[in-house]
Amino acid sequence: MIEWLEWARGPAFVFSFTLMVLGLLRNLLLTGWNITKALLRAGDKNVPWKNLIITSFAWILPLKKLKERNTPVALFLVDQRMPNMSGTEFLADAANFYPLARKVLLTAYADTQAAIASINDIGLDYYLMKPWDPPEQNLYPVLDDLLSDWTAAVPLPYDGIRVAGTLWSSNSHTVKDFLARNQIPYQWLDIELDTEARNLVESVSEGKHRLPVVFFPDGDTLIDPSIQDVAGKIGLQTKADKPFYDLIIVGAGPAGLAAAVYGGSEGLATVMIEKEATGGQAGTSSRIENYLGFPQGLSGADLARRATTQALRFGVELLRPQEAVKVRIDDPYRYVVMADGSEISGRAILISTGVNVRRLESPGVEELTGAGIYYGAALTEAAHYRDQDVYVVGGANSAGQGAMFFSRYARKVTMLVRSSNLEAGMSQYLVDQIANTPNIEVVLRTEVIEAIGENRLEKIEVSNLDTKEVETLPAAAMFIFVGAVPPTDLVSELVERDRAGFIVTGSDLMIDGKRPKGWKPNRDPFLLETSVPGIFAAGDVRHHSMKRVASAVGEGAVAVALVHQYLKTV
Ligand SMILES: Cc1cc2nc3c(=O)[nH]c(=O)nc-3n(C[C@H](O)[C@H](O)[C@H](O)COP(=O)(O)OP(=O)(O)OC[C@H]3O[C@@H](n4cnc5c(N)ncnc54)[C@H](O)[C@@H]3O)c2cc1C
Image 1 (spheres, rainbow, N blue to C red):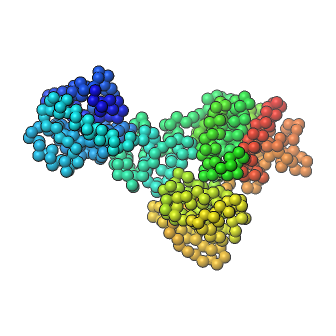
Image 2 (cartoon, rainbow, N blue to C red):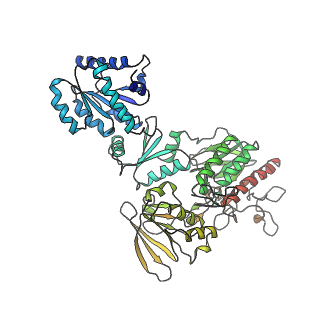
Image 3 (cartoon, rainbow, N blue to C red):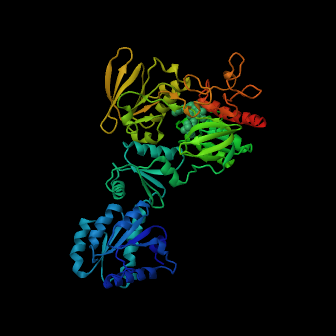
């Protein structure tokens, strides 16, 4: 058996000339049928038809579809004489989709000149003069040779999700970030650098110029999708299975994940709601070095992946992306209302919504966010700034970690810090690491007053807080870490919060020995309980919390123990 037919069980061929079904032109029909028979004869009887993709010569459309699915095409074997277009025209079009596929033209004697010309014009690999019988002598060896050549030279394409866009389209960043943070593998295609990807995008976007275009392995595409669209397509669960739970956790950062693991493992019917991706802030950290048991540190993505798997293994339902917008009570039940209007009920609720990044209010920043300006470590983007100059705004631990991470890629990282020394807001181990990293420069007493750029960040304007001197600096990217605010609007009318919006719990609720207003149980609030019995808070969202991964994890675990105690009382 000849090898290339064996090989054909993998990638697909395209025979552009075969119109057996429609039976339009008798001579073509014959040619097509004969060659197909010859190809079949070459292998055993089990030639996998599904891998032999037969497309009509009249439309390029099937090729487009094949490309959208990222199906590899090794060889085009095309008759020069076709009714609607010539073989060479077809091959020229096909090369837009599959520039590396080998091209073979079937020609009559009269077409020899066209065939020779097309060697230069379209990079024709071979022309087969009709009649090519016997195939063992005139057809198979040629194809065999070209296919081996292709197999050796062309890497098999990625067969997962592909996201095509530009570095400067902010929704491209959102989609990539969502996939990465939810541990969904994908391939990034930058259409500014990859002509094949650009052609592919143009072929599906019908001139709408909307990015990104997401290609799925089953051939579906989404243009400029929301993360809900992407989540729906990849099958993430967004709706609760059960009508009622023992414990509803809002927020799947370290606190929520720990609570989910303990709740699930201890037999509580537990559901967890997450609006973006599991791992929360920790999930965006490039390296957490102070978490117990990981002397080399671990990445936030790794921590998130492990904890998510652990929670799911214990039967916890995880709804993502899904946003909780309101919590209400109807004693003894507690309800969480979602952004899509649906509602889940349960016996106890844990609020572990952590904190959101604070936005930098300087002019130009909002417009260029996602196009060179990013909040947090934006790990998905770092490698794109290899050998360029980037800025990190902020002076706390997260900024320090970000700077260390970017220093692996960027030529130079400049940290712009408002305070007069790094020690004021950063752990000493990071201050030391930064001091020992030659391509990080720390500029103190500085703030960003404007971000400048047409469609992407080009320059930033910074001001010295003491001298008021203003400087304009070219900037490839700016990563902002300027603090955090607690997202607690969902309970604003229900539980007590401090002036900054953090949720007050436990003994902090007791004023002069008095229990909070409206408190009914004949006991004081539990350690992590809010001013409403059965509603708990853990992690960064809690008033006076430690703002550390380990403390959030610890609080999540403690909260579950307290939920058990609470459930005994209702
Ligand atoms: C870049 C960075 C590096 C860090 N490095 C370290 C470190 O090295 N060591 C360390 O100890 N700490 C570190 N921290 C701090 C640490 O990550 C946090 O203290 C910890 O993540 C807090 O956990 P949490 O679960 O309370 O909240 P978060 O991690 O903030 O998680 C809250 C989650 O709730 C979700 N959420 C919010 N509102 C809603 C809603 N309405 N509906 C549904 N979901 C919602 C959010 O999307 C988020 O996923 C770092 C923080 C950052 C940003």
